[in-house]
Length: 303
Image 1 (cartoon, rainbow, N blue to C red):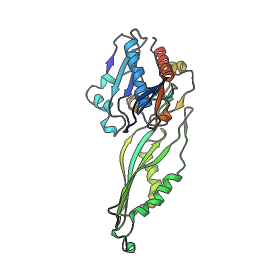
Image 2 (image 1 turned 45 degrees about the horizontal axis):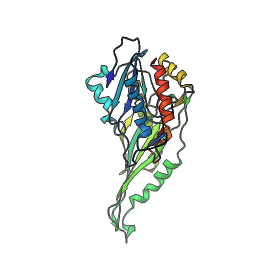
Image 3 (image 1 turned 135 degrees about the vertical axis):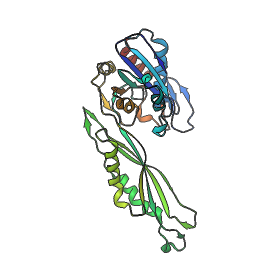
Image 4 (image 1 turned 60 degrees about the horizontal axis):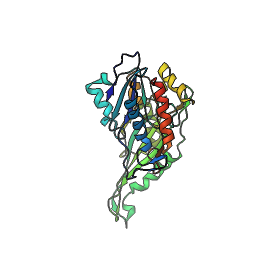
């Protein structure tokens, strides 16, 4: 963390996470493009933050730079939560800009996250005598069909249209190749719009899978994070939108905009890189996107 103390009337918090999702994609540069895991999400944003910190000496606003760990894992490990637990005043500000990849367009709010595990029970038997048991894996088909055929909501909030997402992300089951399995688990990841809270999202997900659960089955929420509604009334964030020269759009994903929103700090997402490349095998960020994001944030800071 680093903070200026220039006595300005407003303080802008620029925040970015240091970690990436797992993978072995190696970084390499080709022309004006940097390829590699995390190049868009979000090493590009970190590079812009570092350049601003190193070159902006007389900003129109005071600035706090926050580089933190553990955004891509369970929320309880968040570096922001760790700082907030011991010195919350360090994270205070008039507004916050989370430098996630947005293609140098302001993305408002963020979706909430609900992670849940559905466990289905069966009965063991020898595979040569399946009628003596019940195959838990075979029971999983209708659950996956329900998830795959679910129609996502697309609510519009303050002119920003959010599209929800529900995906099965892990399946575990089976004992041995000659045993009918008596248990299977599927992990679900639900990204819900900010017109719902965590309790409402849990109820909505339970309604989707509920018809396929029996007495010995279970539905358990394993992790969650709140959404953040659009909050662009701040004059500083309005200036960010104006400097970007592009209409605001909804953030389709969860970011730590929610962390700041929970604490009453207006926040938005803005950074270099295409958000649709995040977590993908072809992840990359272009020099032009880095320079564009740097120019807009430099204008916001008055440098």
